[in-house]
Length: 61
Image (tube, rainbow, N blue to C red; front, side, top):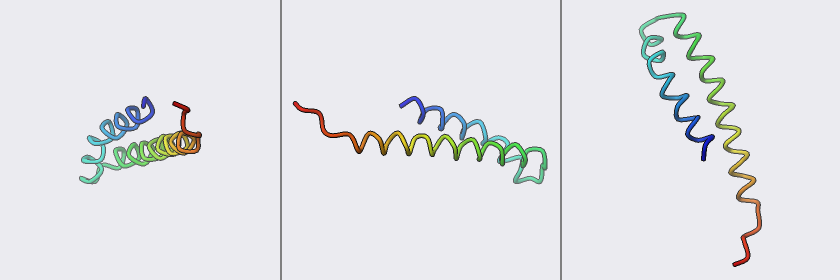
């Protein structure tokens, strides 16, 4: 699922700033907060897609 790969990429990209923010870097903290908002939105998008998939009737086979 492409959306999931994008979510993983966003989390990985935020890792460096998370470490800097833990050290007290205020600019990194701001970047982390923004990244977390983006991650939340991406996770919600994935949640909706998964819900749509689960609501589809099983394929006739």
